[in-house]
Length: 401
Image (cartoon, rainbow, N blue to C red; front, top):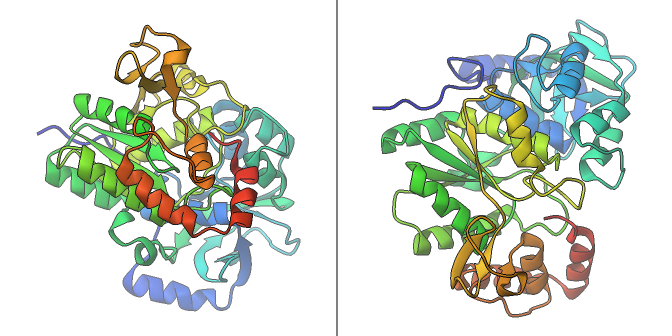
């Protein structure tokens, strides 16, 4: 039987979460430690470190790794890594060699402990230009970097929490160990990951079915972290995806699961990160469509395709590059720029933002745009939003793809 792809740059998952007596002892020790507050993005990164999703990292990056990742998409030792994984603070008192307890800003829960190995300042302009290809404060990823503390704190971490994801999301939330076990049980060796932060419309369904034609299965992998205003909540999104899978996919070809990260909206670089951690989850391929992980007009529609050509064989997980997909009236079905010979006027171009707009305005959603079972679930969600909130949501969220 064929094997699953190995974890990134490692023979086994590097799981940093403590269990049993080790966890109890470290939690007790953390009571006496200085508390360091982490943001939502840093919280998601910690949970990923805990479950092995960021294998082979052992904690937050030091300055040499940060700079090398920004400029070269690799750690200082040469290991491929496309986006900095860092923890920031404004605390002037923290010292190298000190142990700190990291607490989540939203609930004050102790998430991890860390032995500080470095405390350093960074060039935020450089990071934004390299990672996001812009310094525009209106870019949500740039805004987060510029809002970071004065210093980055580096060091190995011991993760003490699951972040509440198993309790909140149940079976939808799966760790890399769990997805790998699932794939082995199903005897799948080639698996394509489909990244989403939206409910799936007909174009998304088409992409997943293309992947199923050439792989053993597809993992529809939704972000469960913080989203932008206007995005559909994870529980509603999951329910709509379940309806799609039940009604329009062959049994035992699709796994729906979720992961704990916030979106960074880093476009091409984030596409690489998505492929990297999907390798840790056991996926051999990542579906990369139009403007993957993009926002607004900061990236070209196929920049995320092209960046994979620049990294050669740094990742075992490979991209499935798929052109712009749409419904064509003359083809009488879903098609793409590579397969449809007809004119623009014959094509219904699909997007998550357009679907959200139609639902928010209580307009008809054509069957060739989104499946009726999906629309019914989403309409119930939108009917529960106050009209005033709908306006705010659409004004804030209209620019995302």
